[in-house]
Image (tube, rainbow, N blue to C red; front, side):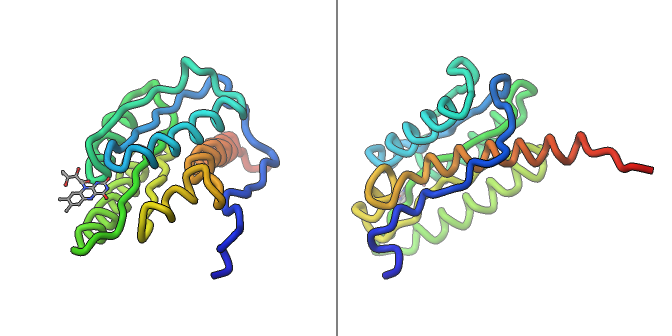
Length: 169
Ligand code: RBF
């Protein structure tokens, strides 16, 4: 496979907005905790690295990925939260539960973002097995938690650009 030895968490960091006063919520699913803790660590450190203040990053846990949407909604509805990052890991099993959960979470998080007008980031791994997950949670393929945090930052930059734009008439 083309991605076999590649770090997939490579992203451009040009023109990032100032996030020193922005407030983030990170919602973490407790299922597959070894993986989701690593995703959290990646997301948290990335936010701090690019200028977020530690006291402006709050964390909430939900039991499983299915609960991420509601957890994200509760945070996104707060006036003092600018962006929400949802982290989970749904490993393929012998039944199709993973498909149901993945679709529900993808739709749920999309809805929360669109309804609240805030960046709500899908940081849910959907691997075939635990190793694939670990490879993407601080392993050979990078850390999707880092990417989720960077996505939140970039969306805040776009939001700022859109709302500060004034047409030259
Ligand atoms: N939650 C996850 O975050 N990752 C999983 O891999 C996962 N597998 C599940 C498998 C089954 C058969 C069931 C019933 C639940 C699973 N969940 C998983 C939990 C799910 O996200 C949710 O917490 C529960 O279904 C309660 O609403």
